[in-house]
Each structure stands twice: as C-alpha cells, then as structure tokens.
Image (cartoon, rainbow, N blue to C red; front, side, top):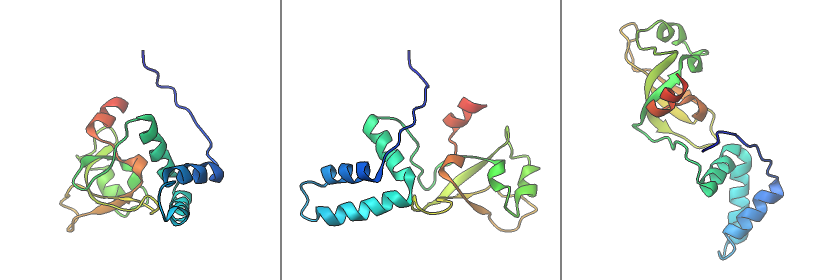
Length: 145
C-alpha cells in the first residue's frame, strides 16, 4: 500500500553548503562551484526541492518546450485576456489547454511561457508567463477532476 502523505523538511544554508561540498569534493574548482550553486539555490528554493525529489526518486514533471498541458483559468486573473478566455469554449473544469513555448530559469518570475488557444476575438497569438505549479499534464488533470 502506498502512502500519499506529504512531508515537509527544513534545509539550512549550512546543509546546502555541506551537500555541495560533498557533491564537488573531487573537483579542482570546488570552492567556486559551491559558491555558484549555493547562490543559485538561495535564489530559488525550487532548485533544492527538485534535487531532493531526484535524490529520493520522487517523480515530477520537467517542463519542456512543446509540451501540451493545462493551466487553471485563475492563472490568468491579472491578464488582459482573463475575461475573454474565462468565457471561452476551451475551458474544461476550470482549466485552459496550452502549449509550453519557453522554459526560463527556476529563479525567474513566471518561469514557464505558454501559448494559449487561438480565439477569434484576439488577433495575435497569446502567450502567458506562469509558475511551475500552474502547469498540469493530462495525467495531473485527471487526478484532480
């Protein structure tokens, strides 16, 4: 029987530094690598979350350009296109289909750029920057609806 219990852990800067020192222990530029990656991890806590998931074998989505999926319509609530899309025929259970067109740094605001479906009322192709937590695959969506 598998468990769906979520656990929360706290990792300090010292823990991260110790991890990086072990990881790069045989590298001639160890100190430079530790400084570089420690700063990157500090900029985006998501980095250490992914490293931990990889270490423990936890599956997660790695967004890639061209990947099809869905975003909750609420992810567009501050967009000029919110009203147009929220009343469109594309909405399924509160989610809008989309396609990833760009994946930015984990430290970026809105690290995933998605292209939204074409709508007659809008002349141009609409893209929106979203957070990792706002992108769902078919499999993810089937689990929550």
